[in-house]
Image 1 (tube, rainbow, N blue to C red):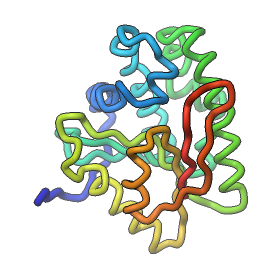
Image 2 (cartoon, rainbow, N blue to C red):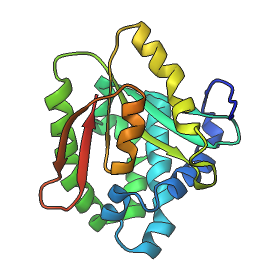
Image 3 (spheres, helix red, strand yellow):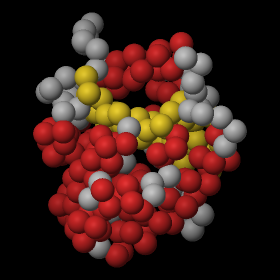
Image 4 (tube, helix red, strand yellow):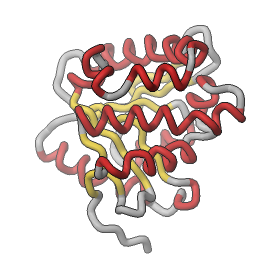
Length: 202
């Protein structure tokens, strides 16, 4: 039986290392494959995505890891930070991120993000909530219970405070994990002009 201490806040000096963990975790994830379809480019650039996302989460939300060994990482944003605004994007290093990724990546990302934002607003417009961002477990640690152990303490806190949590996934194999944690699917869809599935979960 896996025993873990409570998740800890990710130290800022661990962001680059954590981004590499997340990059490995998401190498074959459908959203990543859609936005970075070339496997060589994906391997070279995917860590830049997570360096930016983790920096944003650290500045404007909460980022947790299972331990300083970084077996798994989860990003939580208060709902008002989920739709990223220009000033805060710049503070998190967006200009550098854009230059590293290039126009083609952002064209694909925009197609996805427009629909993701639409779904989020559709299902959560009337109440305060936490938006759970990317959750990743290093492939060498997957299947050992790290994801649920990473999420359960914060979910329990939210339940005590009667604050709902919302997330999306593009990978069908994740859906039963979230259902086991008490989430419900509120919408299943295909992002327009793509073959990319999305499950909105609350």
